[in-house]
Image (cartoon, rainbow, N blue to C red; front, side, top):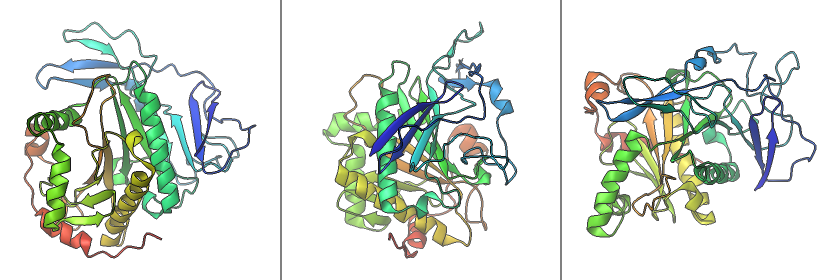
Length: 361
């Protein structure tokens, strides 16, 4: 992997990743030339016991842009620069123009609940220069490179003193609120461990303390033995509809070995993770005659300076909305109480996905 770091005119960073060396005279473009003046803060929610981010400047961000304007393209129709240079890069990462979290956050308001600056970082990860493709259509070598980029960002962001959790994700489809057509994801580098992964890590920690092994490591071994919900099983990775899936078509992708993060994957594990990921994405799109809208998230070890032998990297997919009455909207019980009622069985949905033939190329 080749990596080149540039600085935009407004001070934001741009990192380009590629299989081959890039030209040394590249210039980082930007639709904005003034330094970011954004500020954001966190407020403590005393009933939920968690931080809530407040970033009112995001009201002015791009929303559902016209088809002829793509801020992630190399230039606008009038030839003026947007966010990315015209070069032979394969994956690009740049700081969000409208961040929820930023290193320079300062001076939170004085409130009746605790408040703190919303430190950390928000980055955009552009998967490819091809604006007409999708993550699942990328060749395996490209997905392998993307995993290297995710690992690099985990290591670099996680080394910062103001970052305790590096959360990579993709929102796919306008149903999830995606406003840019170019295939891309994001990374939020939080100054705390978010509630959902914190809960998972707590459960994993208790299991590891009691058994001396990883919770997911043992769960995956049982899933492999039963072989009812597997979508992919390779030498180093698997994909499955978990027995405890809360959503229809919920899928997990993970290494078989309890690697703590993307940065801990070996070359062979990374390549097998790419195969597992591509298999899932192609199966999703093979279900219906349109791209499958989803949320994809990385759950991995915190970067809070503490040991996390319990952590086991895994990617979780959640479907985005009701389609042909086969997906479920979240309602009061799920959102308000956090108690899910599943309208379908994991085995049924696994069988549908297993029936989709895919070609990894």
